[in-house]
Image (cartoon, rainbow, N blue to C red; front, side):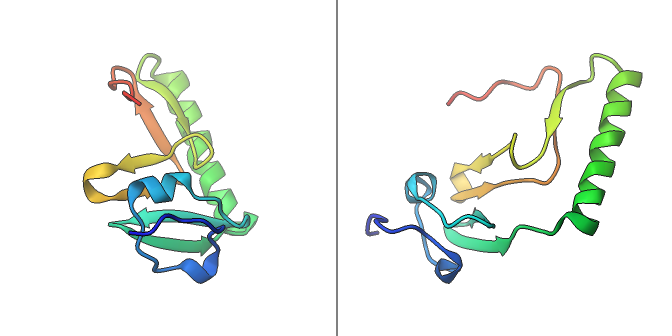
Length: 109
């Protein structure tokens, strides 16, 4: 597959990419870029309402759970804190909400 030289944009939706191309690419801002089994998915970043309110609700609940059950949750966050890489599936995902439990093995990269 050819090396990516230009910034990727919504027009590149459906474009086949390797994991390295996905990780090394520059992207036009305002969109979420994810790799799904070697194919680029592009979506608009959701508007704050109602999507942001739903994410906020889940994060509030996780905070309460963390306080009520200390020693269970190591950390939690969203797409800014988590980028899930699935190399065997040639996929990279940015979850809205993700949780790392205490005792979860650390990333090796």
